[in-house]
Each structure stands twice: as structure tokens, then as C-alpha cells.
View (cartoon, rainbow, N blue to C red):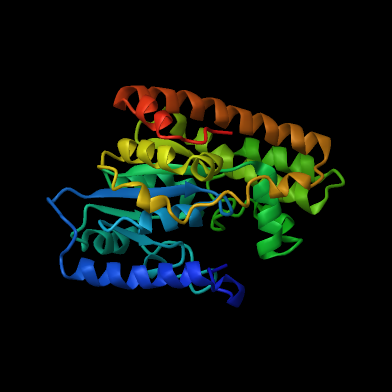
Length: 307
């Protein structure tokens, strides 16, 4: 489903952001961004409703970055959902056309093709976005309807190789979902199971062992934005442009979905996956901050800490 700005989204903040984007686009066309011929391509993968729009707002505040939303020129040939990427040759040509230090795009529905995408952009880096499964499930149903979790799981049952939801899914994933769908599940259960299936891709593609991939936890970004983005830019190999890029970040959505009632078995499955991701994330954070000397100065600046 393509992103559509609703009237309720229009406020002083979005108007200000829109004005900034116009200014930024004009400045980039005039060559204001310093470009030394080295371009960093960043792919945001993972799952929808994991705070990737917030990440879009952050990167968009960097004058040297071109950001593509999920529905963009890169997915112009998808006449159904407007999110699947065009042929990679044309995507590469579009990205290569920018004389900018960094280009960011978020083909979330192509997360099952991570290695293919990284091969198309040999020097790219990947941010794998994730968020607490209850918050993702609640946001999913609110945005796309109470039956959306069930709709998202049906392609797995049919083993549809063309539907992005089930494409490249493993037999283990499909068998697990079949087993759970024999139970009496509520809408939050099915939406949480879809979260689990998408997170499975991170491990089934062995992205946890790939140095070009970094986990990007929503809660880290919104609770300690400056520290998180300093760390992210260090991973991307780009200079941090300053704390002004996180001026639009807020934590108002954290925990809102935790009131949803999941079946015990579904909750246990997803909690185990979340713990696995969090453990890897914490270890990676410690290693990256130590390597770049980030922890001490950022903590001293009054960071809020991670949840």
C-alpha cells in the first residue's frame, strides 16, 4: 500500500519539513553538497511499521543525502502496491545519476533479496530495521486494517514465489506458520507472526554474519537519537553532520502496542526472536562504539540511554 499523506498529518512540523525539503532539493541541484566522487549507498531493509519513516526524516535532514521513500521513482513500474522495485539495472542507473555523498532507499518489500541488492550495489551498507513485535503488530493493523495480519500470511500458506511476503521464505518458516494458523488466533497474533517471518529472513540470509549489515532498532533511535545516529554514520563510514538531523525525532509511539493481547505461544515465539535480535544489537553497539571512540563523549552529552 503506497504512502499517502492524510489531512491529519499536516501540521506545523510537516509544513516546516516540506519547506526544508524544497530548499534542500534546490541546493542539491545547484551543487551545494560536497561530493568527492565517493558515494555511499544505504539500503534500509526489515519490516514496515518499524519506524523507517522516522529514519527517513532523519536522513532527509542531511544536506548531502538523497532519500527515496518506499513508494518512489524506484518502484514506478509496480502498478499494484507501488512498492516493489523496478528492474535492478534501472534502479542502479537512477542511484548512479546522483552526484551526492550518500543515497538512501528503503526497499522493505525486497528484504528477502538482500544479497541480490547488495550485489547490485557492491559498496552498499544495509540497515536492518526492527522494533518490538507488539508495537509493529498494532501499527500494522491500525494502518492496513484488522485482517491485514491474516492477509499477510496467506501467501506463505500458498507458497507463492512471486508475492514479496512469502518470496524466498524457507520451508521451516512456512511450516511454523502453518502450525500456528491451525490454532484459534486473534488479529494481533497474525500480525505478530508476520513480524516473526520477516525477522527470520535476517538469519536465514546470514545477515547477522555480514559486516555490511547493521541492526537498526527503532527504540534506540527515538530514545537516544543523537547517539544512535552518530553510531549509524560511523558504520556507514560518513562524517556525522550534526544533531540537527534528529530534531524531528520523538518517542511518542514507543510501547503503544504493548497492550495488545497475544496468544501465549505466539508471544513466546516472538519474544525469543526479539531477544535474539536485541542481544546481537547490544553486542554490535558495544563493539562499534568502542572501535570509533563514541561511547564516552556521547554519554557525557546527556544521552537518554537505550531501553
